[in-house]
Image (tube, rainbow, N blue to C red; front, side, top):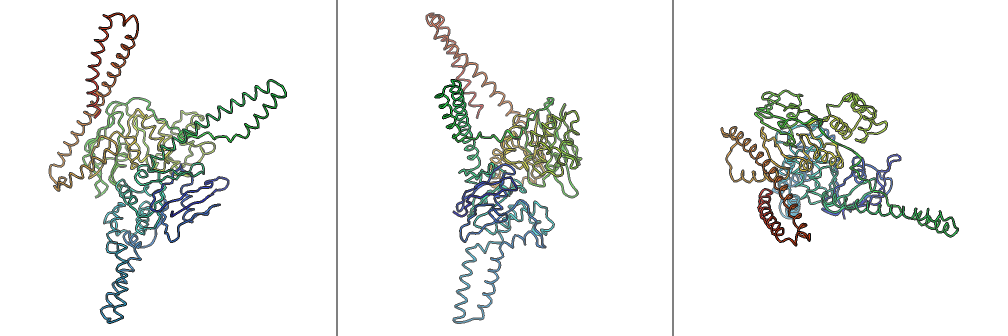
Length: 637
């Protein structure tokens, strides 16, 4: 055991955050802390590192063990560059290297016993330097910087000029390079793109120390952690396994608790009916019996009814009218900002009912494409055409469609003047804004709260084409699952940008990867995208030909797009054929069952001619089903 928390209590005013929280972390164990927003996850980390005092209880770190902590927000100052800031994590190694070089110079002028003593010191330092990977520390620094998404040109940038997100990435890199025995990370993926998150997954999975993570990225948690510490209404409970294991066990526990609660409620009602009946007899013995049962009933330890968190926020998305089949057509789209060209000659078609995820590294132009579709930015070249009866609902990650000076009530009432006060209040209540919350200014809300307001406006829009830019940012896991469920039941069309791979896996039917200034299409979810990327990477290693630099790239790109469209059409036909085959199988199986029922009736099985007729019909059905089963298997593959 490297870390233990024992009976931690913490309250803010009269509100308890943690109640007798106890758990432990083993060496090299990868642990996640989960819970809804405001549950106390960051508070617990701050208590562990000593930034906040616990009201009661203690945190025990094993003797001689080091602890590193990355908070959500970092403010690095000073005149160092990005590279120098990370190199500072290796200052002990650098000092050791300098000492070794000094010894090398001094040994040239020594002889005899003095030389022997210095040689021993030199040998010991060299051995220690090698054990700490001293000969590769510069490569290690460069590897971490590149893994976290910094290009070689970024290395020389002063940290004082960086954005908040970039400073957090620098702090994360520096922390990883110091290699503490236990690493505590608070939302480490918030400012990383997909490739950087994948790199961090690999780094932490192979990390030699223990890791404790607060994160809402379920895909990330599934890849790394082996234990979940859940904070729920101040209570802490530990589950072994990754996030999916925890989610499954949590559902099973809730089911068992609900079953126990229902049984107890049934027993309580039964006892109350017996007591009422005994009292109605109005005899001394019956009254004493009733009183005895009442005392027994009072002593029963009541099982609390389990609360289903998913019912707290209610999100229903439904289009007002049906759009045409062609929802969006983009041809030859290009955009540059000064000398920086984001993309050129992009072509894209989206059909009704599709849920398309637009992915790519930071800075490739994903949000720019969404803004151009919404008319917020003009394209440099190309056309953007919406289909007939298409009504857009837009959710932007910066929430620029919200008015910071308005209250929540005004934001909704001004956008939808036809709504009654009751309807506005009930809508906001569905997104957890109740009472005087509706009179808060938008500008005073947190990022997560603004996200909920934007979702409320989106729900009221009744749009048939949703365009979402990082919709899961600032949402806790429960809220993400509610949004996923709403999108999966939505009958309109969706185009979204997201780096939440679990969300993409759960909701999308097609992925568009914006890479190398062009769109590459993948007809499946995120796991399918990864599989195809890996195959493409293997092919690229086998063939070193620089295809991208050849003159035929543009024509090949158009050919590839045509092939993708044909493949999409083939997939739709296959799905349609599969559905028809299943319906025909069900129809024939139903007929077969009807014949079996008829053959059990006396008036039928005593009639030889009728029996032979039914048996012949049954044989025909069996033969047809055999063919249909084979066809279904072929289509299902």
